[in-house]
Length: 341
Ligand SMILES: Nc1ncnc2c1ncn2[C@@H]1O[C@H](COP(=O)(O)OP(=O)(O)O)[C@@H](O)[C@H]1O
Ligand SMILES: [Mg+2]
Image (cartoon, rainbow, N blue to C red; front, side):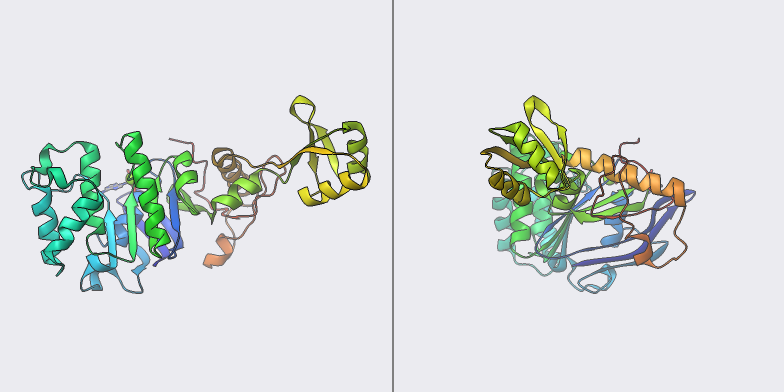
């Protein structure tokens, strides 16, 4: 479990992270999404004490990282995959980490097996490919069998097989009850890996929500319907209070009625249904709506008056299409579209 409250990190004139608050709960994969330069790596370094916050607090299982006695047993991290002495073998790198945290030698063998590096365990890490380096980093993160794990862009440089492997690993670690935070600048990757989604832009929180809420919310609550008699179905739906427009290939797009109600209306009108599909946007489309909403709110209303964290995270921004995204979208001064940069 990770708690981040009011985290701010300034590097000289650059505000890398700006008053960021969110939690990483156990049992799910929390995706940490934002464009390059958004502040993801800085936030993750602050979690493991590699960066000292300018202000705010970060705790892992209720403690500051610096106060953890055997940190690898509490939180595993993959941050910079290349942070291995090039002359050291994979085995010795892990053995050194294990020794410094009071972990048994056999655990080194176990994690090497887990990440598929057993065959090259005695080779110099300096000769590893990027993908092998990522696997070694993941082995180090797993070493202490920690309840909290953070991975910064873990699929970077991996081949398709490696990407699927990492994705399944993240999901199984969460299924075992661990708190898993994984960052990416790729929305499609997050849609496949994460349950929850923390979206940041320019160091500020844009949304703290679930993948499902984002995609369903951005679908605008529309339902695509096809029936044996479209004319009759259309008038029945309109009579029931639905607003109907023409969809692709003769389908009807219905707003204002949920799918079960549409099924009932069709039944009462004696129209056989051939299709009844609630419209769900891709995460990418949803993300655009979400960030557009946040920017729009910012332009219209400026910064919320209260400085309380709750006040800046529950605005329910309305997307330009009129679809209300049921998410905690943030109307902050620095929140802009994630597609910039
Ligand atoms: N050590 C550093 N010194 C100065 N600026 C930094 C440093 N680390 C990151 N930054 C700046 O902070 C911002 C956030 O960077 P980063 O956390 O790496 O973003 P992300 O991981 O989301 O791509 C960027 O503008 C970056 O240039
Ligand atoms: Mg980064």
